[in-house]
Image (cartoon, rainbow, N blue to C red; front, top):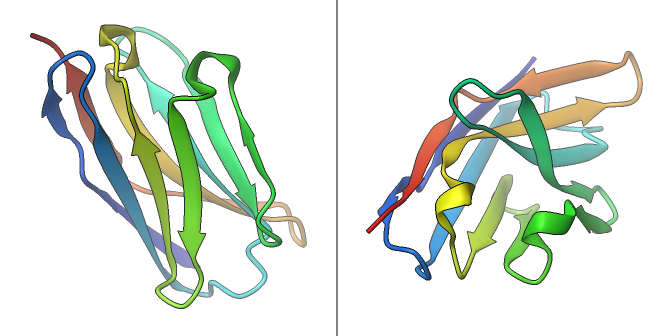
Length: 117
């Protein structure tokens, strides 16, 4: 089992910044991909960014150039630096860890990000 705990959400004005953290514990070895997803009220949960065990990153088009995903393997923590936030970024943000072997996916409890003036 892998336990994931997100933190760092909050209320921010448009154009502002936030950094989300996802602390991983448990059977964290062999996690192949970690990701951030987000879900706005009444909408589906969408992929925001991914980072592989080798450090390769990918982003959904709407956040490219504004968000940066990273991981600190020594601290077993993943981050999402979010800059130039927009009201449409408002959502609950979820951390995900995926193991290819066994096709196992783990989720955190989510952290709310609200972008509003």
